[in-house]
Image (cartoon, rainbow, N blue to C red; front, side, top):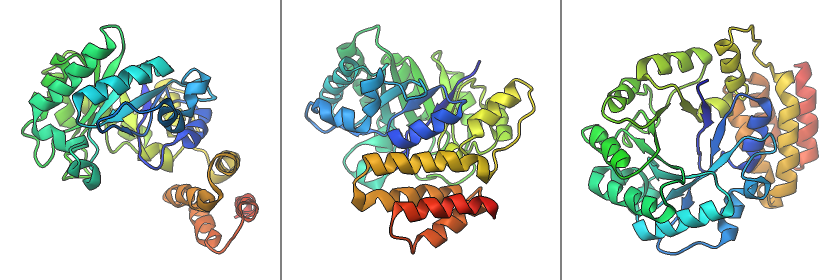
Length: 318
C-alpha cells in the first residue's frame, strides 16, 4: 500500500502534533522539523529536544516511525551529525534542500542550494560515505530556487550521490506555497531517476491525494498543512483506498484530540508559550472547522488553559 508521510513543518509539526495526528491514524512515517547544522557536531540533547521520540525507539506513542531531518551546507558537519542521528536511533536521515525561509537561504541552507546541483551532490555523497551503505538516506527538494531549469539535474545528482529516496515539493522557492503545485514535474523527475520519488504539495482532500498520485505517478505522498487543518485526512484517504465508507470527522469528534493536545502542551511547553501554541493550531483548524475559528477568536481574551479547555468543550454544542 502507498505511504502517507507527515511533512516536516518548522515551528508546527513538533512531537506534540505528531503524537496527536498519528493517534488518529493513516500516517506511515513522520519527518522531524529540521535540525540546523552549521560547522559543529551537535550534542545529543539537540536531537532529543526536536525528536523526543528517540526515547521511544524513534516512534510516536502510536508506533509510527520518526525520521530526523538535517539542514545545512557544510558537508562534513552534516555527515558527522547524520552519524549521530543514526547512533541515537533515527531510522535513517533526511536532508533538507527545500526550505524556502529567507533566513535559512541567506545562510546557504535549504532551497538556495538547488542553484548548485554539484554542491547538492557533494553534500549527499559526503553524508553517504559517513553513514555507510546500509543506512537509509533520503532527501527533500523543491523544483528549484527561482526557476525549474535545474530540477531534473538536481534529482539526478541526489540519486547519483547515494540517496535511497527523494521527496519533491512541486513548487520552486519563489513560488512558495502559492497554488498550484506542479505535480506533472514530479512525473518528469521520476522519468530520469530510479529511486522512489515521494510527491508533496497541495493535498487537502482524498480527491487531491488521488489526483496527485495520478499526475505525478508517485505511489507515496507527503502531506503537511492538509493534515494540520484536517487531522483525519490520512484516515479518510485510507478508507477511500479500501473502498470503505468514511464519514468526515466533525468538530465534536476532533475535540478529544484537541484537549489531549492541550494536555501535552501544558506538560511540555514553557508556560510563557502555552497559549500561543494552542491558539496556533486552533487558528489553522479554523480553516476547516468554524467552531475552532470561534474558539480561537474567543480564546484571545482568556488567560488560562483551563478556560480554553472549557471553551472548547462547550463549543461542541454550537
